[in-house]
Image (cartoon, rainbow over all chains, first blue to last red):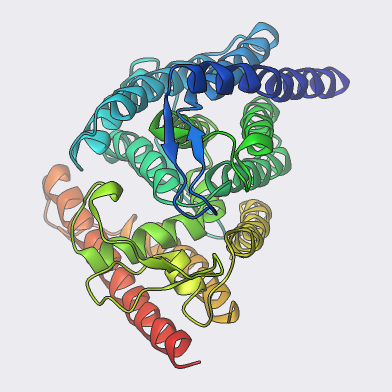
Length: 329
Length: 77
């Protein structure tokens, strides 16, 4: 146990400080090459560097490889490979605007290393009731899981700091759940993702100095999804992600199709005092932000804190679910 | 801003996951559709998948109803 605590501390330090140290240089590099986008919700419409996925993937790889040095398992290797492939998909989407179907299909291929390495358990475990053996169906689940988590995190990347802050909370909750289930190795892998996203949040929070871009959010989502699969905590991971899943659900149920988020009508409007309100446009999708500001307009910072409180709430539900895994009725 | 209904929505999603898991593990998983007849295992699994998808549809319909109710309530307030 003492050994695992030392590894957890070491991995967390590497994860946090790699991203913390690299990101300022990346911001300067991107700004110098005019790789910036306008932040429309900010006074004066500041130009913000993008994509920050490069520092995120370096943080994930560095920290997971440190973990691999101590616990050389195929599970950690599967996480690293899947995250790296998701980064490649994201960087293509950052450079060229691809169609709505590109990311789900490409991310499905990113899940293949998990299958090839056999880094999964085909029993799907549920709280209170036990597990169900689905060897063939589980392969489909693995292939679907990475696009779902990737696009779910991508769908909440709408305001300054939301994607990184939310991923940080969800990863720490998942890590706590894995510690409860005594799956220490994968718990540390999740802890690393939590610290990578926390370090990136330092620069991504309002007012953002850098945006993660598709490369960043897809790394967040794919790493989270692969941890859920190799850690055998699919249901718990879904619970920790509920506010983001809710956002995707709201979006899909109002749009009735998969579209690239850049192609949709804005579900909110910006008032003169720089507060976001719900648009009266009936064709605009219902999203979690539109739902939050439906009552009254809020600042970007206020909306962020509402979403983070929701993330903490679902994180608590995830840890409760982890405790319920050993309870049988 | 009324956050209460949004928390309720997340809580309902969680409860539906628990209930759905219970249905799959205790009823759908061990059930054999052939009865005494030796039914092809792939066909048996196919029927189970179809029922699971039906449950997902029901899950989505329930959530969609709650979503519309919350959104209307938020707009009225």
